[in-house]
Image (cartoon, rainbow, N blue to C red):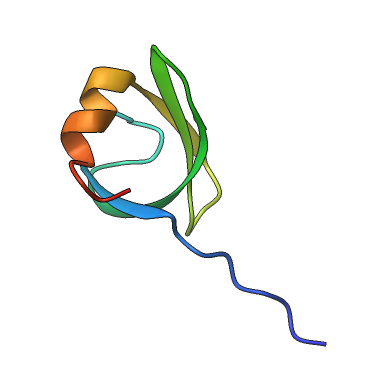
Length: 64
């Protein structure tokens, strides 16, 4: 049986906010959206990151 591909929840553009993931447009899966932090996983590499919720909302305006 073929392995299922992971699907991106949303695409965001990062500009050095998450050095572990890198810069540029990334497809990410949302892990948790809390009142202070947004935690996510990059679809391509599986690396995790987090952004302050205000920054996350600014980067994903209307995309969720």
